[in-house]
Length: 501
Image 1 (cartoon, rainbow, N blue to C red):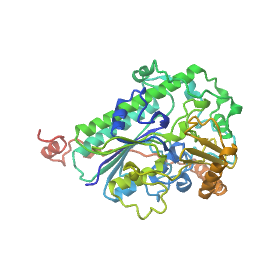
Image 2 (cartoon, helix red, strand yellow):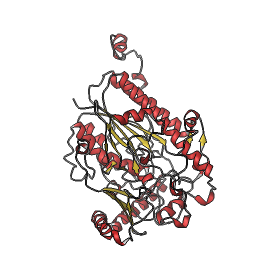
Image 3 (cartoon, rainbow, N blue to C red):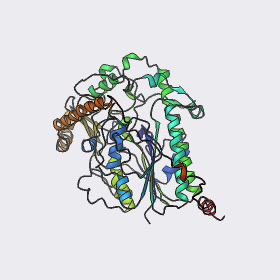
Image 4 (spheres, helix red, strand yellow):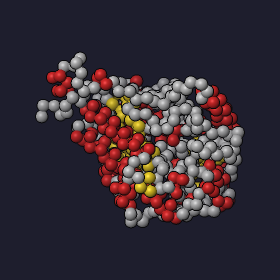
């Protein structure tokens, strides 16, 4: 029988904190236990360091230039197959509890059931505009208030959401154990933590009172010492309006680490339900992108630097043993990997899918092809592209000087080797690979056209009556608990697990 699959996705989790599972000083016993029996990918990268583009790519195996999900307000087209489509077509039950940041009227994208609404809007209201470089849209752009306001809270918008996501996911796992549907299942549970705001419950905050890692490894730099794109990120984050102190930085990082422990409890609850209900499943743990966490003075994402672009990725097979893989891989590899693990044929779309199955890597093969990333959202005025190839990272943008980093010898990406005479051969090789993959002029034109169309549509739909695209979870109350069209004896027997013990 095809294997069950449980995917746990988190939001904005920095992959440098998972060099081989969670670092030792994180209070994350459940994630560590999962890591011990997982194939761990130490150098896994997002397709794009922003929520909606990264998630659409994760689901489809395509980069944003193919999905056209360039930013957090770009529509994910209904005719793009996702892993949920592929698995459902092959006979799987597919379900989502939590966030996936779908924009547009299709709020399912192959999922048969969706247990919660999303935490972010589904319309075009967050569309950037390349025609207005430097414009800050205050009501939805990040600012530094999340850092200066970091601290303790017992409830927040994000906590309320993730508590609900975990609750409905656990209830669905209990339902699945009662075998009223004999299909294999693929369930995606997608949390919004540890995404800012940097606010945590006291029980988790207290775990990091004496944490020695509350200071960034690379201290903040003067604005003028940053590369052009980092300057754009600073400006988009309205840094001049905030006085960020060392204590603010410590509190923000402390809350972020605390929220990893909060997530660890959620993961533990899901794993406990699987154990209690005797269900086996392939477990996948992944993030959509990372968080700079004050390194260099940068926060949040939107950058190709490691803190923002590198993500944790762990895949645990039932009864499998743990191993560490260091070859660079991408979140776009997960769609073909899931289909490969489930024995599902993607033949009709394989020629267009850009991700590669990781099953050979899990089984010991070497991954040699470059990993690609793209960014074309807020804080950019033209698309940026990146290749991770072996130990090298090469970044290109029509507006900026090239960047070349040796991640083996310079993990902090402090020395740009693009103008170093000793590395011109490497630079030319990677430039050629990048130019063969991307036509930046065409990419820029497509992004601008998409933005202009969406801004017109959004303004039009906000006039007169408004019908929202936000997903509305429905409960069929007449099919829950005990109703008079049900046989009480059959109901009590079927709704119990285990039965007859």
